[in-house]
Image 1 (tube, one colour):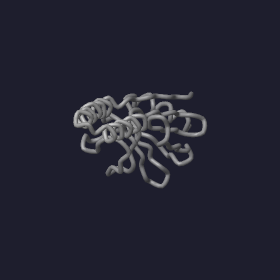
Image 2 (image 1 turned 90 degrees about the vertical axis):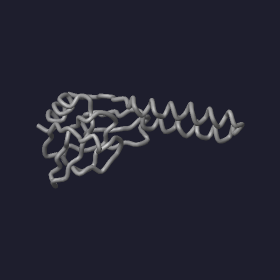
Image 3 (image 1 turned 90 degrees about the horizontal axis):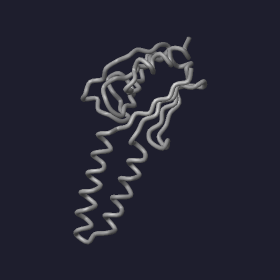
Image 4 (image 1 turned 180 degrees about the vertical axis):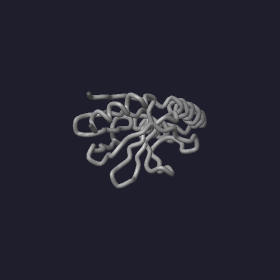
Length: 142
């Protein structure tokens, strides 16, 4: 059973778009075209790198990638002892974070699947489909 889910960061996209329009608009109105273009290019690159999170449960492991895949990670099943569905606190935020429970990759929402490693450490994967993701991982662990 292979599983793949892509989750979009709507709040991040909206915020980046507003910043793009406002900052570049103000700079362009001031006649600062080079800074306006620089800000535009940086924001478009940032949006391409972090606007969505793809989680794939495949034969070789759990593959996570933000955006176009520059930022990515593969977690081999051999490291994982068990999984559980958890709910993150809102103040943990989004992105790649070190939470009180270990590392977390999350794009939006509060639901996550926590991977408990054999060494006792944890890793949380934010998802809008915690039951489906947990089921897919558990099938690979069995």
